[in-house]
Image (cartoon, rainbow, N blue to C red; front, side, top):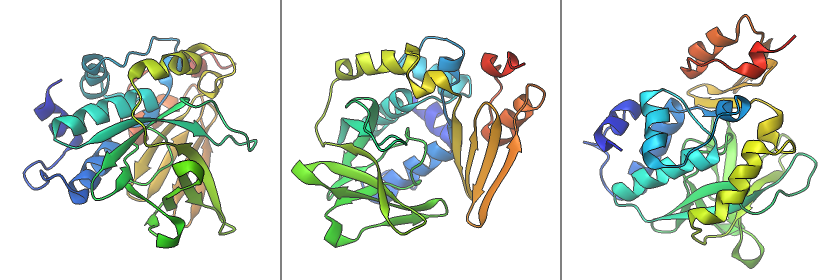
Amino acid sequence: MDIQKFEEYLKIDSKNYNQINLETLNHYITRFMYTVPFENISVQNQQPISVNIDDLYEKIVINYRGGFCYEMNTIFQFYLEQKGFSITCASATIHTPDDGWSNDGSHMTTIVQLDRPYIADVGFGDLPINALPVHYESENMTVTTVSGSYRAIYGENEEILVQKLQEDNSWRTSYKAKNISRPWSYFVEHLEFNEHNPESIFVQTLLITMAKTYGRVTMSQDQLTITKADGKEQSPVTPQNYKSILQKYFGLDVTIQTIENKV
């Protein structure tokens, strides 16, 4: 992987951001999330997923694509290590819409150790463009952006709960993780599940989402949603318009078979 070209692609200001500190980490996260969309197009197109660093570099930097958690956080962790950061590749379990929990390892997240642990996750799809300081609830270290308010607090048994503030002012846990480094072998079966199993949400439906200065843009097989501070705008996605949407909002030039095959 060519670190210089990676930084040029992300428009990282390595001259002014080159220290092992929170300011630099936040710059890296912001540039990554503003440049690389979270997307599961390869899964939808039944194309194999590789987490080899050179393959990820080619997919993201050379071919202007994105990926999902195993891809995005793997290449970001590699980059952070090259820049001297101390990182933990941690497994997580996701809080599902039906109020259940996925299997541990169904999500891969990144924890960076500075003055305290920080969640530096670029592969979840709904997190802020800054790192989340891991803290006890009484410390009140919420991170607020145009997309909402987020926090990472300690739960039971030192679990880390990554949460988002809801409209009713309650906190909902998006996922929970432990600050334990996991080898790639720990995630293999979970990647295979999310890549191939009909019960996987990534197999069932298309999801593309990207942070913007004004909020977030999300595209499914049928709908485009633009979320801003003052509300949401929605419009239909069709076989006729989806490629122009991909280019305009996500910088993607790719054919999506599940949309092409829509009746």
